Image (cartoon, rainbow, N blue to C red; front, side, top):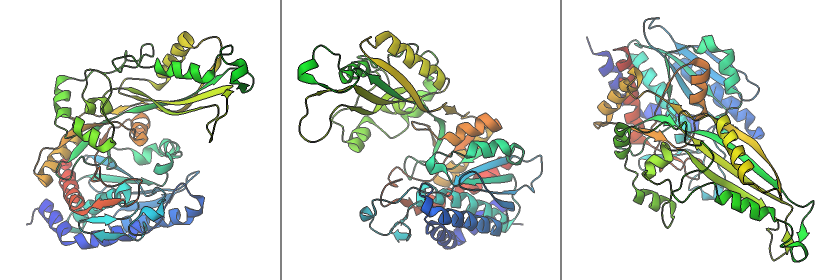
Length: 458
């Protein structure tokens, strides 16, 4: 009797062209979630998914409406209550394709050149959704799925998933599971499979300052009325010390320290200081003293100025003392930091340092906590072994500098951790022109997922 795992892997190998053809068909749909004129295409993408996941053998397949774009759900629960249940996340919406003139081929006419498929959404994340569906299809077409799977595929990730938390809250029982698989974080390199076990949180603010009632003539009032732009510059300059540390009171009190074992794992990552210099064009690196660049962007909190405005910024000159100044400030947070606490820390800093010559206020624009998963969990270790089998190298564990809100949402509402993986690469031009998917990596990813699902059952 043939081994079920080997049979599924052989099926995937024999049906590479079919899998690619289906991805091409999926990627042709311009499901741009931010453009109301594309709502028919959003609906078309959801309907395409319903037909596709139904064809591979999923059950209870349904489009669930939300206040925005719909959620697609499907499951296969034949393995029974003793088997693990994984909730597989994905999104079918994509970013706008502009500027169109920068594309070598039309963004919604998927084109294979060499080892890459070029199309908007090919990597982010229609290719990742297809990979998980293909792995399930290969197992179901050749035998029985040894675990239970539930798919939840939303249409609003590229606009911040505004309706997903409410959907998850309302469908707790439907989505109940042991853990989530989030294939939306990618790999560091095509020969280095990656598990992202930590994601930073976010606290985003707008700082507004007012001085005089209106803009003033700087020759008449300069030197007598405190310039709000100068005050803002002074406040911002004081938010870091000479060692690159954030100076908000108590900012580091709740920061979880890196263990020596974690630092050794992070040191395995190939992003050296030279990599950051080459990919940014910066003349030199900067940051918190005592940490490597990769530790700073994934495991340490930051405070960044995202935008500044004050006074006259047009062509030519205007001798004005502005009445108003504004800065947009974001803090990337690490595990155990609370966005609300950071808000209070910012207020304390301003109360201690803002002069009485101006009025000010802080507006919270967005916030969310960091997320971290157990690298030694049954689920993470099952994927580590699967990826090692597929690529022939030991995967790396990575802390991601950005935020993936759905991971936190799953944890807060469903009480589950996520295994964050993916087969996109840093060179895939996500959100930019000529987005692409590296097909050899994608095919290995399908094999890795097949191994993963069988490993979970063991």
